[in-house]
Length: 296
Image (cartoon, rainbow, N blue to C red):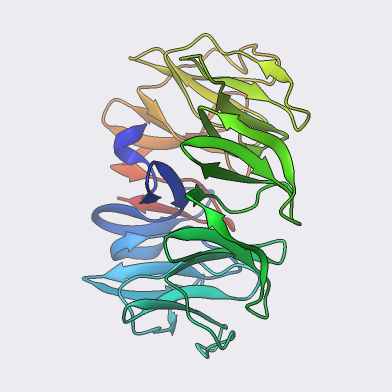
């Protein structure tokens, strides 16, 4: 899975941003497996709000679902659109632009990320906080590292310990975890202090699942991808196999399909483990907005 994972922007040891696959040349396929946007991009992100961020060389652009460039933000680094805005780098700072490319918030930041539920994570003087769409701080910069809000909570880190806050900045789960990731499907993958294994907790900080696998990701579309070092499978929230099939590599489920690898090629399976798109791609990413970035 790791060799085909989405590109992550890292701050410290915490993954903060999503989205771009890298390969020889990338295009987009629909759910029939048809290449509907030619493979001409060096990097390609998921479609969000009918737009995807792509790169040709060191230039970032936004395209629509026909593959046409709808905006050139004149930058080499940008985030996906979310709630009508996108964070883009301008010189040494980051700003937010609307879908016309105009600056939407009259402030700039050391680093800026996507809006989720009306709040966006930003970095100021090496500390992370959260702003509203006026650019005002709702949660002042105070964390050593952090993640965007997901399902009403944000994962934050102070003094090398992790926990969760709500949208008012109040502590929802005590900041005393050895490691933690965002909530998905009502659960979050965490490592408790003094432990060396990951478990899943609910929002009451109760352990709800303890997978016994060498490697596993986060829940997505109700299923969890797990591995034993050689093959990848999917289990449900009870820890039971979702289906019998196993794969050489895989991506989490999204929009009812998961990219999976057989031999040297990638295709897509449904939640019964059936091949909906037979393996035909050198690289395949998850579906978003009905399209997926692929390398033919």
